[in-house]
Image (cartoon, rainbow, N blue to C red; front, top):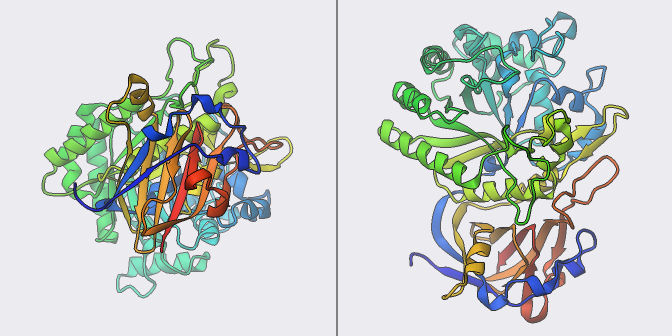
Length: 525
């Protein structure tokens, strides 16, 4: 075995009973025997550098402005208060509406902004939250924030795209007149410093046929338009990072064609995944025949494997990384077709939705080829972290906001190898249970953080993993029912953080409750 190995195992403790809020414990008689379980951490076997950009978020030009701005176009105080200390490491703008959004029509005084129809079922109106307002608000909440801009391949010209790069990232003292001019315009509008754009993404789901769109592109058209966009971006900023879009309908022909044609000119291959609920014992009571229900773990894992392998095979001269630029739990289609789909929207951010997203993020943390991910979405559709009630205007946060606040607290330099350990002679039951746990570990010279996503029954860990480390604190997200979700009036999903002395049970053990996300932080002695 390579590297130093740390072991965690132990007896059932009493985390849930000691919690101030949240769920009642599962029946302890159903917990897996403590002697059967452990977690192995190979702290010197580095999977990849740790980056908080794995916990990024998507925004949109349409709904985000309702949450962030009031009717006068001023920043709302309540969203800033709710987001106080909230990590925003990577922020992507935007999804489907990115291909209708004209950035030059959304800068400057409101009186000068032209109306835009960002979705075909929305009316034309000027966009109040343009690039300047969005970037300024995000950096106000998190000064370390970085950004992903989805290039409008549908309506912007190559010159529009180059001007956007100049506008956001240009230097006012540049010897290039066009760069200096756009940079000065940015400063005049309230962004004195260049915007830290991590990636320019080439379009969004261009080949996907959905009701919200009036276009479906072939791979050939995507290649032609993207080639011109790449030239425009690199002319404006030769060091720019660019993401090529993989097929959102998982067409291997699309992926192979665009990688062959453009893979050597870009840095990332972006993918979108909307997945099923993965919590143990969950039921799909609303699910009927037909319709999209979200993808299984097996399918998502297989598609990532294929994308990784195709990048290596078709672009051997360049190490392309994967960027999961949209992902979320998909709410099930109603069984009765004339029922409103909104009845199942809560599933995206219920306890089951939080477990599903945490599980996939845990899997991707353990994949060296996946470098970044942005969850969909900050405030729109079924998936939001923050919602504003249409009738009252009151703002609220979902369980997904709790999850991302927890994950955003992680610090470290490296993701290291970790895995669930089962008995030497496991029964069929324990093998099934083993598949219901995801774990990842992050470390640096001062600390080790373990995140355990437990979709199954309760089990226990020994908090004394080695003489090198001592448990400092733990944070837990769980509730009574998989359907529990936050609303304007109730908040059953809240992260509870406790110091080490209140976590330890008999023999120094710590319980991992059933159907929970648990973060344990260990300091170096």
